[in-house]
Amino acid sequence: MPTHDLSPIPELFVSYDSAQKLKVEAGELVSWDLTPRQICDLELLMNGGFNPLKGFLTEADYDGVVENMRLADGSLWPMPITLDVSEAFAEKLEPGQDIALRDQEGVILATMTVTDNWVPNKALEAEKVFGADDQAHPAVHYLHNVAGKVYLGGPVTGIQQPVHYDFRARRDTPNELRAYFRKMGWRKVVAFQTRNPLHRAHQELTFRAARESEANLLIHPVVGMTKPGDVDHFTRVRCYEAVLGKYPASTTAMSLLPLAMRMAGPREAVWHGLIRKNYGVTHFIVGRDHAGPGKNSAGEDFYGPYDAQELFQAHEEEMGIAMVPFKHMVYVEERAQYEPNDEILDKDKVTILNISGTELRRRLQEGLEIPEWFSFPEVVAELRKTKPPRGKQGFTVFFTGFSGSGKSTIANAVMVKLMEMGGRPVTLLDGDIVRKNLSSELGFSKEHRDLNIQRIGYVASEITKNGGIAICAPIAPYAATRRIVRDAIEQYGAFVEVHVATSIEECEKRDRKGLYKLAREGKIKEFTGISDPYDVPEHPELRIETEGTDVDNCAHQVILKLEAMGLIAAH
Ligand code: PPS
Image (cartoon, rainbow, N blue to C red; front, side, top):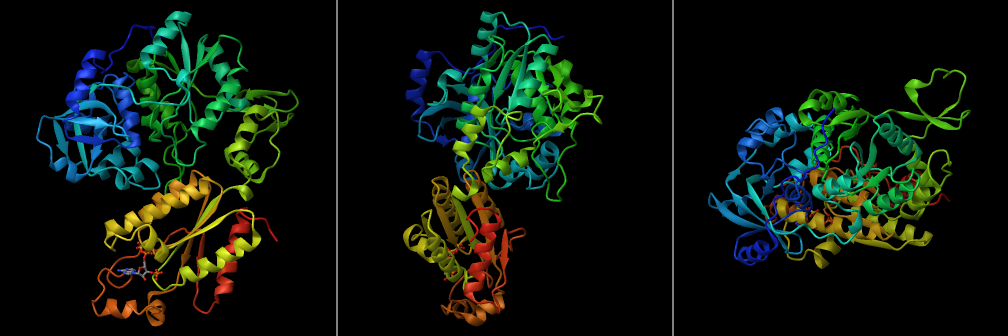
């Protein structure tokens, strides 16, 4: 049994007076504007959540962590915490140079002495840390498409915490939670990590876990970054607050963890355990498929269901935090209570009820009943507020295909049909319109095309978030960029990718704008399909063959798809 040492752990902050002085001096330094994920990592580095790390990993530490989950000095650490930057930024730096780390508004949060500056082997990192170099894994996708090419390592000096305006009273540093446990006399604390709303089964299992370990309970949800598509943390925290009142008085606390998850399954479980240990926790609940990223590109799970529990258990002693395996709880109708599935001996005589995550999302999307045995009415009401039925949510239809494939014509027809139906505002972001109004300075290099598509994605995601319909019709030749746009939009509503699959031969034959002729003559460079690549979408929601089909019929196929997806009411 781990001893419960609640003395303060080291932080990376300097004193208030030194911070004021350092902040002025840091104004002169070369500065790096942190990404949202780096801000999360920096917060936990500075406040001791990532103890024993003293900064972003050096190359030697990184190599050890990737290879065998150990820092160069042999300490257990499963996750590379790296400062990824662009090549252009890295080139400017001298070895040993101090840089300022700023948040997205330009506030200096810390300085860092750059001792290491290297180009990582990302494919190897993906294989070792996430189990496969497969971009269906959100962290592998991030690694290859969002993270910079170069990593910087070195010690960090903390000036101030990132500012949070939301739920301030619910945010604690490791030392604040340690002090709270000391004050309350909580000698054993079991933590529950979550990125989802809590329903009755979770309340049952967490309380049982605490009772069985004779411990107090800490609900410790992640509010940094979770899996794309998760319920936003504002909604979740309101849900958690409603559930908190269902536990017996003074047995349970809740605190928000500003962690950027990686969904790395087994390694993530060990990482979560080490972080909780820093927060002064003695026991940690690990469930089936803990921090699982979903299916890989072959449609199989990335990790086995108990891999996380096994890896955690193998390091439990060294970590100094005990694992409480998560029991799969189901509702037994006859006894009107939740019971662990593997402890029900009379399964043939009772009715076992369960609603899966997918089924819950379906019921919310379609505005169907969610029974009281499954969740608390307050939680359901919160979820319904943020997730109205699909027919009332915003969405984006994203056409992609060669120039002259018919994207704009079909998009226009779809827009008119949707406007005729009414109900939600419709905006058309056609390739040419965007290039005139949003991207007039851009050309057709890969970099410029990516910027163009990201701008379209940004506008479409804002429209979707606010309940409108965005219809986009750019060429969007790169699969990775389309994926980034999809992830951004799916946080708020559906993303319907429509591949207008007109062949390049047909487009060239039609040559409506005379551009193909110019491209063949070499007068237009980097022309998609002629002298520039196009990644054919592998799994679009809809593929339209336009050859031999009139526009009306093509547009009708899109409308039928939208109806089938529950996005518009059937007529
Ligand atoms: S991209 O790749 O998504 O940013 O392209 P997009 O913004 O949709 O712009 C494509 C329109 O610009 C014209 N055009 C070219 N297309 C492809 N390659 C090159 N080099 C090029 N130069 C100009 C072309 O008319 C496209 O319009 P559409 O509506 O697709 O025919």
